[in-house]
Image 1: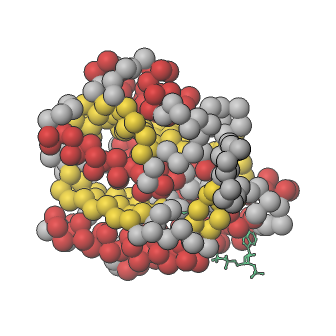
Image 2: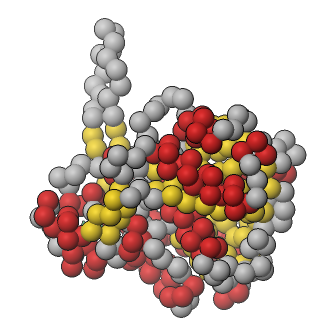
Length: 317
Ligand code: ACO
């Protein structure tokens, strides 16, 4: 596959750490020191599908395509207001597309998971132009009285358009079931026959375990894709990691003994936007002219499941 267009969309409202100090027993100092986050954009009156559609339109414009040129839409999403129809169907309704579409949920790893699916379809020849939209509202999964989780997240949508090409040099996706460290449970509609217990539990996270698992698995994934592609770690121009926490990014960077400039970050402004975080970064860097033809770029993501995914691409746009 090759990436021919990128786009993104953010909610309008900016929630700063100072604002969080007013509603929680927390401080700007604690949040910045432990996470690197200063502010995040969060949903107020927007619908997630509207953000997703805006990101999709921006990616299509960037690719010089119209919605009718697209053969398949893959949406990566953990939660939104609709269980069904899929977010992909909602987005298609808004942008005026009517090709096949479905959602995947690989939590924060969803973007790279979607890339692997797109690569397989493009290789098989089944589809020619695929739109990937990652739209997430993790701020609706957390308990806003829990200072250990609600300060971490932001909402956003990121999108890319891919077609047949040779950008992807190596990819690895993994899953290692670990419900005990990170989960979000919700109660379904009752029936007269349900006898099992169901729980309505906002996002539960064992932060330290998630931290350790994220660092260890990302390092293993990155080493694996570098070795599969036969690329030395110093040849990589950028390591674009899932933007969960600045300390996670720095731990991985220190392992690979790479300079700060090679590990771009925007978690300070947007918080953790789940699977949207990598396409957001790609769009930002592409539009700011930071990505050049031939740049070797590693993408690495990790999230609930525990899922992980990494790939090495050579930018050709
Ligand atoms: N403000 C002030 N104090 C806080 C806050 C807060 N917002 N949150 C927690 N604390 C307190 C705790 O209550 C605890 O107090 P205690 O010592 O009196 O018990 C103290 O700070 C230390 O808490 P820890 O959880 O041990 O803090 P830690 O340094 O591990 O940082 C954090 C917590 C930021 C969640 C860290 O573990 C982390 O980033 N983990 C990764 C989690 C992550 O990125 N999750 C995103 C979702 S999943 C994904 O995208 C991979």
